[in-house]
Image: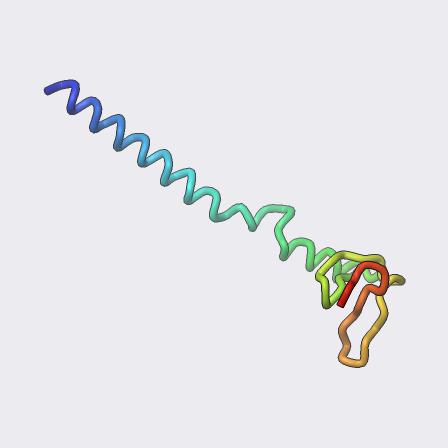
Length: 79
């Protein structure tokens, strides 16, 4: 009977550890390398911007302004 109780306690502890691991991974995008961090960084550095079509970071001089207000990198963008 003691073996069954110990076995159930071990299973419960493993499940709790797995749940804690899953919950801690959901906040991973808030860190210093999150998407929001890079967007704010790009706005502060006007020589670098993001291609509106392929969403790749490119040097500002490699981006061509479009009439719609978006930028397009003419080196990498295939669209």
